[in-house]
Amino acid sequence: MLKTASRTISRAYSTDQLKPFQSHLSVLLNKAGGVVDDTIVTKHGDDSYYIVTNAGCRDKDTAFFKEELAKFDQDKQIVHENFEGTLLAIQGPKAQEVVAKFTNTPLADLYFGNSRFIDLQGFGTDAKFHIARGGYTGEDGFEISIPDSKVGVDFFNALLEYDEIVKPIGLAARDSLRLEAGMCLYGHELNEDVTPIEASLNWLVSKSRRSPESATFNGADKIISQINNPKSVSFKRVGLVSKGPSPRHGNKIFSAEEPFKQIGTVCSGSPSPSCGRNVAQVFLDKPYNKTGTKVKVEIRGKLRDAEVAKMPFYPTSYYKGA
Amino acid sequence: MFSRSFLTNNLRSLSQTVSHQYGAAQKVQFINFSARLQSTFKLNPESIASTYSQEPKLKFTNEHEWISIHPDGTGFIGITNYAADALGDATFIELPAHQIGEKIDNGETISSIESVKSASDIYSPISGEIVEVNEKLDQSPELINTDPMGEGWIVKVKVDEGSSLDELMDVDAYKTFVENSEH
Image (cartoon, rainbow over all chains, first blue to last red; front, side):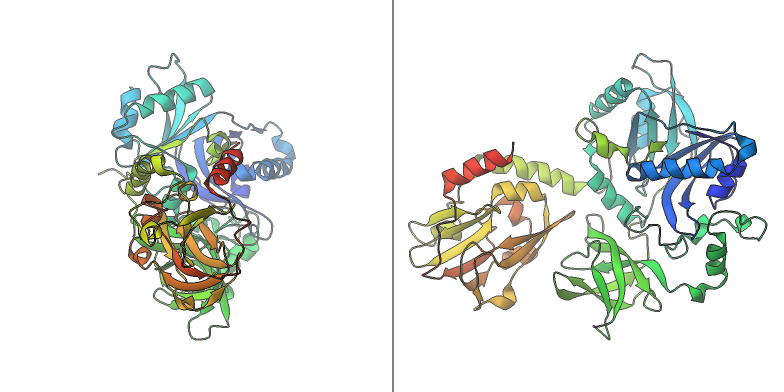
C-alpha cells in the first residue's frame, strides 16, 4: 500500500489523475523512458494510493519507490507500506454470481477499472476487503486482497465448493488469457530498454500529461519525442498469428522477402486454446509491423510462416455497465 | 506493495479461480489423466507398436522415450505416459517427415512435442534409419496424451544392427528411475 501525495504519483507515473477508487494500468519508468515495471494503480483518496506490481519485480520496485520518495524532502510524511497476504482472482462471466454468494455489498454497480471495500460473510471476520473489478485476463472478474492468510485460504476453499461454476487454475492458464487479450507481461513485452511507445502503450501516456509543464514523469523527454515523431520509433509491439509449431519467447523473426534479414523478436507466444491457432506478441521493425504482413519465425532452426495480426486476438468482455 | 502475480509463491496451497468460457482444454486434461493411469509402463497391446510382431522388446531412456524393438529390427518410438502427463495437452507434434530414409544417430533430435506452455525435443534412443512417421499426429496431436504408448507412437525406425541397446532401461529399471526422479 502506498500512501503518498498525488504529486509523487505524477512523477513516477505517466497516467492521468484518477477519481477515488478508480484504477488504471500504468508503468514505472526509468530516466531513459524504459519500463521498470507495469502496475495497476488505484486511487483511494488524494493522499492514498494502492499499487499492485509484479512479484518478480518486488525488490527493484520497492527500491524504485524509495528513490522516488527521497526526491521529496518536504514530503517526509509520505509512507510506503508493502502489503502481505493473499490475492485471489475470480475471473469469467459468472464471477459476480460467485462473489455475490459471499458478500452483502452490492457488486452490480462496480464497473471494470473500479474498486471498493466489501464484507466477506462466513469467515468469522468483520474486516473489509479490497476488491477490484478486473484481473488481467480480458474477461470480467474480480481481484480480492485478503491480508489474513487464514481467511484467504478459507475463502479459496469455500469458492471451490461451487465446483459446478468455479475451477482453480494456475498462472500458466491465466497467462494464456492475458496473451489472447493482447496484454503485456513484464519481462516479455516490457523491460527497462523498451519505452511504453515502443510497447504500443501510447494510451498509458495521458493526453493531459504530454505538455512541457505536465510531462514531469521519468523519461518524459524521450517518450514525448517518440509520440510527436512516430518515425523516430524503429520498432513496435504487434500481434502475430500462425499455424503449426508455436512461436515462443526469444524466437527470431525474419522478412518473408529477404529471409536473412532479421526484423524482430518474439516476446511471448503460445497456442491459443480460445482462437485455435498460435498467437504471439512480438517486437517488429517498421515497416513490417502492418497488419497482414507475412513474416517468418525461426523455430527450432527452421523458418515458419506467420502473419501480423490485430490485438486482442480474442475479444475482451469487461463489465462496463449498460 | 501487493503483487498481481504473487501466487507464484503460493501455488501449492492456493490458486486463482477462473471460469473462462473457453476452458475446455483444462477439462480434457483431467479426463485423459484418469484414463491413463492403469497402463503407465506398458505398450497398448492393440497398437501397431505392439502388434507389428509377436515379441517386441520394450526399452526406455532417461529422457522418457520408449522404443519397441521387433525381431526384424523394426522399432517404434514414442514418449512414456509419465512424460505425456508432465507435458500436459499436446498441441503440435513436429514429425521428421522430411527425414524418411535418412540415418539418425543415437541421441539425435527426431521430433518435438509442443503443449500450450512448452516445447520438448524427443531424442532417438538408437542409431538407425527413419522408415515412417505417425501422420495421424498431424491431425490428432491429442493421441500423445490419450495413448502415448500405443496410437501415439511418433516414429518408426529400422534399428542399425550394431546399435547398442545397453544404455536403455527395461521396464523395471525405468519404473525405479521414475520413482526416484519423483522424490
